[in-house]
Structure formats: C-alpha cells, structure tokens
Amino acid sequence: MEESFARPVKHSQTTITELMIPSYANFGGKIHGGILLSLMDKVAYASSSKHAGTYCVTVSVDKVEFLVPVEVGELVSLHASVNYVGNSSLIVGIRVEALNVKTGITKHTNSSYFTMVAKGDDNKPMMVPKLILESKEDVKRFIEAMRMKEVKSKINEHMDDARSHLEVENAAEILKTERCIIDIHA
Ligand SMILES: CC(C)(COP(=O)(O)OP(=O)(O)OC[C@H]1O[C@@H](n2cnc3c(N)ncnc32)[C@H](O)[C@@H]1OP(=O)(O)O)[C@@H](O)C(=O)NCCC(=O)NCCS
Image (cartoon, helix red, strand yellow):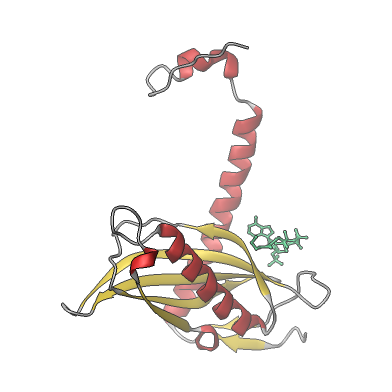
C-alpha cells in the first residue's frame, strides 16, 4: 500500500441497529453483556475493515462498563468510527445507545474502544491508510486515543513490575482488610 494513501474518518463511520429479543436476556430479564460485546465486536470489525480495506482482527478491548441495563424490546444502535491509526493497528470508538420505541427515550449505555489490526493475505499485520481528520472532533479523538495508548503501555509496564514483586509471604498483612480467608493446606 502507498504510504500517501489516506481515508477520512467518515469513510469508516458505521452503525448497526439490532432489536433486543427475549432470547438475549439473562435471568434478571436484562440483556446479557455478552450479546452487547458481540455486537460491539461486529461493528468494530465493520468500521476497521472499511478503513483498512482488508480483513482485521480484534487485539484488545478497553473501557467496557455497562452502567445502564438494556431491556428486551429496546433498539440498540452501535455507532463506530476509526479514531486513530498506527501502522497496522486501528482504534475504533464505539458509542452504544438503546432506544425505547414507546417512550422515544434514547439512553447512552456505554462507550468503548476496540484495538484492531489489519492483516494481509499472508495473515501478517499490514500497513493501513493514514486517517484524514476533517473536524476538531476528529483531531480530539485521535489525540485522546494516542494518549490512551501511551497510558496503557505505562500501566502494562507497571503491572509487569508489580507481578514480578508479588509478596506472597506477606499476604496475611497485605490482605488483612480484604474480604478473603487464606486457607492453604499444601
Ligand atoms: C494482533 C497480532 C496481529 C499482533 O501480531 P504481532 O506479530 O505481535 O505483530 P506486531 O508486533 O507487528 O504488532 C502489530 C500491531 O499490533 C499492535 N499490538 C500488538 N499487541 C497489542 C496489544 N496487546 N494491544 C494493542 N495493540 C497491540 C502493535 O502495537 C502493532 O501496531 P502498529 O502496527 O500500529 O504499530 C497477533 O497477536 C494476532 O493475530 N492475534 C490474534 C488476534 C485474533 O485472532 N483476534 C480475534 C479474537 S480471538
């Protein structure tokens, strides 16, 4: 692919709308989080592959918080677009909204970010087109995604360090205010 090749954000804008049917519900009558995750994965694929012009795979998912339950009968719309591109990676922002058709009220249930990687026919990561930022909002989202990537990388380094210094010998002291009981027999 030519290094100069570029596509605007609007090229990847994608919306999927789906009716929440009873078989999607959990025992409490609300929609399973897994149903929403699967729809989010689909829209992330659609949006990223439109930009990349090739097959994409999901690498990581950030900020999945279901703060408002979704009900059977609601129309869920997932709005996605590519917010950021690296070399072969793309970050897709997804806004999920649920519309109650009777009341006409739309609630925002969550916003999440999927990192996708474009793959070539050889199944190797492939360079994606540059992203053309045509509004201040596009620029804001690109910078936000870039910063989030930097923060994530620092957190991963911190976690690797924390994991290599886990003080299992001092567990009784470390966990004394936590709601667990240490009951090791072996
Ligand atoms: C993602 C995958 C392609 C990375 O392969 P790799 O050989 O490590 O490739 P690279 O190191 O060249 O990384 C490729 C890109 O992925 C990004 N990447 C790799 N691991 C990542 C992670 N954990 N989080 C975010 N981005 C990641 C790299 O930053 C790089 O981005 P860039 O090209 O924009 O700079 C590979 O691990 C894979 O195919 N995973 C399986 C994906 C899949 O099947 N998903 C479906 C769900 S099961």
